[in-house]
Each structure stands twice: as structure tokens, then as C-alpha cells.
Image (tube, rainbow, N blue to C red; front, top):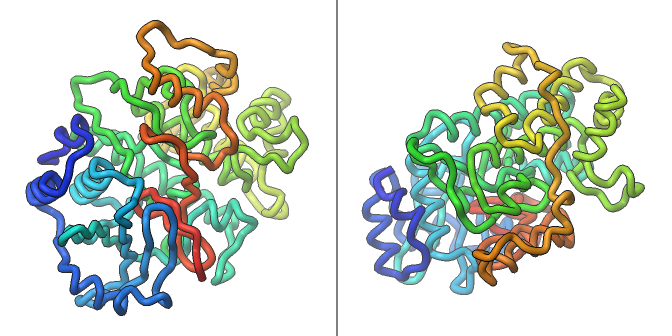
Length: 396
């Protein structure tokens, strides 16, 4: 990753920075603005599949015949230069069957456009976690869910352990898991990604991510390691098995928080009660409970107790047995609700950022150094776009 280190340490910047940094990235195809206009029929409303605070997403067909999701950032976009460059730099250098594929970008004039492969079946939060909505009537049976869990785990293991420097995604959640025509999962949104050089144990950084998926040690102290991603994956894993989001205020108070509910049922040896009733009892109960226990392993309060993603893959596939003695209570941000002071070195900005996490208004808010914003990402008809981690409410 030729200029990744620069991207991890520099923020802000203008046109010359964008041009210079993209020119330094070898694997990025630069599209002419004219070609993007042609691919989208001059940004026809019929081709618009998402719109929101960051701009618009269009379905388009490129000159080579490929369908693409074309993300056009507006001039007022809240995604800054740093996030734009990070997204391009990280995803252009790596390829894996469980990661979205960036075809290229357009930076002509004041235009900032990202071009991705088009994925037909929306995101997990707009399908599985939204009551099974699907224009094609897809079904999330147990086998499909298990394959999605393993696929996401493999994608994360690749980022954490095979890519050099290691990549920490920082925003693993249901809305950032897109599904192709075969319901194979693709991890999307690398705008918040950070790199972890081999000689570093953690990165101290401003908190960014999504409430409900944030590891407590990261949300409260700003200490980022790969174990923060693993915590987020554990939450996602339990969402997929249970068919519900990590917070549901429509449920009775004692059932609203998924992790707390999972731990309660685990202690009573009744985890099977957490499995999605929408499966109508057609699932492997032993495997489903094993997946939920793996979710608990991943969300333990101590980061050191959480398994690596490669180990998670082996646990999910049954290649390795779970040591049930190692499952301890999950770490919950709610445990830190009464924390008022981080320490004398805390800046005003850090205090505001922390308060955004210790006083959440809903589980769908995403915070960054720029503040807090809705990030309920997905894309496709009836949804919104998860490409580049932006918010899009469909106009279709």
C-alpha cells in the first residue's frame, strides 16, 4: 500500500492532495467524467438507486459492459478528502471474494466519484434485519445465514492477518455487508479504515463507528486494535442468527439489547430461544447455539480474551471446538454510562466525541470526528447505498 501510511496520519487537504495521492496509487482506474455520464445516461433519475447527505448512487453500465454502482459525492459531502482517499487506497490494493470491488474513480475538475461492482441484493440491514424485504423474494434459511457468517469472517480474517499492513475496518455492521446475486456477503465501506503496522499494538485515535457495534475499550478510551473489529463481528453474528438488530426499542425493556439478552439466555442454558423464530424451527440447533457462543466469545469485555478472526473462522466451520470455560460476560458500553471524566488530558473535542457514544439516541447513528450522523447504509431499489459508508435513502 504505497501511500497508505500517509493516509493514516494526514487529514484534510484539497484538490492537489487528491490528485497527487490518487496518482500515487497504482491499481486505480481513472474514469473520465464523460464516461461516467454515458454509463448513467447522464445521471438519469431512472438509474438513481440511492440519495443522501453524501450525494447520489447510480446504477450504470460501463464501456466494457460491466454493471457498476456509481457513487457521486456532492460538493457539500460530509465525507472529506481523507475518507475519500482512504477508501480508494485501501480497497484498490486488496482483492478478496468477501470484499466489495472498487473498479476505479473519477476526480475530474471538482467531481469525486467512486465506481464499484454492482451487487444485486442490498445489505443485511435492509433484508434480513428488516423483516426479509427483498424485491426478488430471497429467503434467509439457516444454510444461507451460516454461509454469510463464514464469508464475513473470512473477509475480516483476510484484512486482519493477510494484508500488510493489517487493515482495521472500524465499521463492521449489518448495513456494510452487501449481498450479491447468490447472497454471498461482501464487506463494504472502507472510509474509516485504519492500518496497523506490524510493530504497533494499537492505534490511539478519535472514535468512529456505529453505536451498538463499538467495542467498549475503543468507544471510551479511543484505543483501536483488531479486537475492536472482532467485537463488532460478534454483534453482527448474533444479529444474523437472531434475525434482529442489536437494539430494538419495540421489544419489552428486558429484551431490547441483544448482547444483554444473549448473556442472560447463555447463563440459563437457553440460547436456542434467541434463534430467529422466522426460521420456523428449521435449523441446526446445535450449530446455531455454537454460533451464538462464538458471538459471545467475540464480544467479551477484555479484548485479550476475544479470538482472532482466523480462529473465529475455524470455530464457525467446526474445525476447532469452543472452550466454553473461556466465555465471559460481554463488554457493554452501557457499563460506562456514568463515566464523566476520562482524565486531565482529555480535550473538549474528545469529550464531545465520547458523549456521543455514552449517550446514544439510537442504534443506527454513526459517529466520526466530524460529529454524529445517520449511517443506515444499503443500496438498491427500496433501500439506500452502503458504498463508501454513506447514507442514502432511496427515491425509488
